[in-house]
Image (spheres, helix red, strand yellow):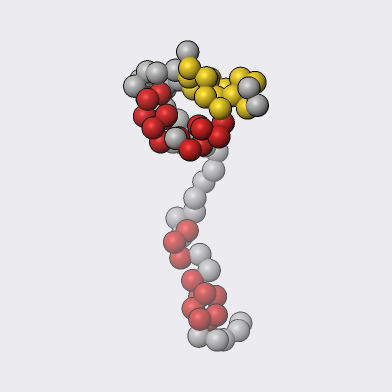
Length: 82
């Protein structure tokens, strides 16, 4: 397994990420001390939908949500006060 210093990793990050995505695992070291192991994510590990609907049933949106405060907003744009 290849060990790369942090400066080189920053310089060649794009190439290293491409290689890791293809399965090439490597270690990033700082001052010669291994800090992190970089490896590809498994298929399906991150789908982007993990948080979708996480508050289902926890909050309620009022029916008039899109028009809340509309009168006050119009008055502010027109330079009027209540």
